[in-house]
Image (cartoon, rainbow, N blue to C red):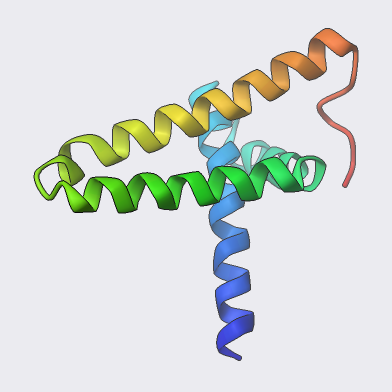
Length: 102
């Protein structure tokens, strides 16, 4: 059961990354969550990479105790925002719908 709980928590975290980006873009919360689920389903490797790099950023900033409260949130969100927006921009340039079903 611990593994299932960890998996559900990780999946929820991965969905929240594009969800927050979509909320910043002005979407409603329900549409942002649906968009987050679709983004993670359409980009599983990129989603996992984003999560792992976020953990790496947390680890590096924890080593620099003073930097953690100052830099972690800014670095993590900036990285996550860039990943999601660049992916969506590339999909639009390629003419691929961002509302593809999972």
